[in-house]
Figure: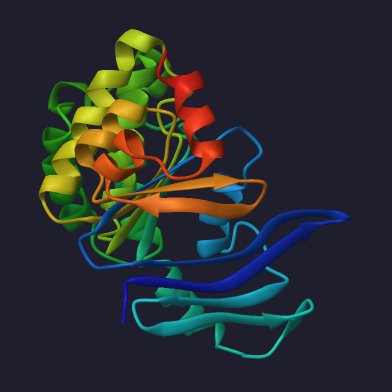
Length: 253
């Protein structure tokens, strides 16, 4: 089975239908970028995968395991809390805002979840955290506090923190949108390195250059639905739908 499989998922917030029968499969080691205008449902889709948002209809499978099965808001499948948490831990997530603990150092931020959630020893967690911080180019900042870091550095710490849980899948929700333009590149370079290492990734992004260069597949969403998807060259060079053509014209000026 795909690493992630969603079948006809729908999400409503009151009378507003935010996701409308979204079906999407993500294969192991695939990098999928989701693009589209604001309010298209891109971030909501990402957040439904790890239970930060609910679904009212549809099914979600993660790594071959049925995580959700809803019909008209009623859950048709029950998984134990322990099983559900094990599945959710397979997904790491990086947000627009960095959400670092301000009173903890860079090293402590990365060590925290492996120690308290996975129960590994502090020595093991420290060794892993130092390795990951070196990987994202921040080995010199291990004892700094988040307030002393640039936005790009904070986001790289957030990526290292997510990787410390050893997820099989990484979800990125517009990870560069809160950054000054000159800091975007350093975060995208870390993400490119992850993609090259074979990490399964879903990225909601406004960075069209990144999507074109790194993605195996690009998905265009609007009004809660998938309008078009394909290889980057198909999406950017030969868009089929008029709406995607209009969107690309506006963002690739």
